[in-house]
Length: 87
Image 1 (cartoon, rainbow, N blue to C red):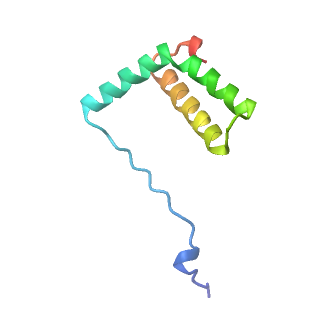
Image 2 (image 1 turned 60 degrees about the vertical axis):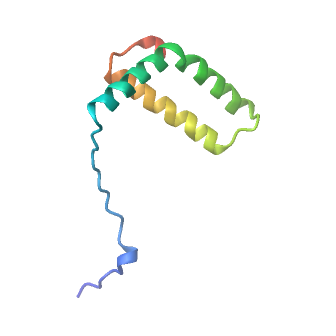
């Protein structure tokens, strides 16, 4: 017979739910991302990278936020209207 595993030992089951925001919120966020990519992305990423590499008060959390932001905005750039100048 097969032994039962205790519930606290079972592997976690991932539930992926896609949330849809109101149209006005989505349009605002889209416009924000476009403006951010056009005006601030490259200088901000350059500065953040120099701070993390330079080690001036940086931590693993800072590096994690840097990588998250890079991933998010690059994925947005790919799915919106790819522009190589933001890579």
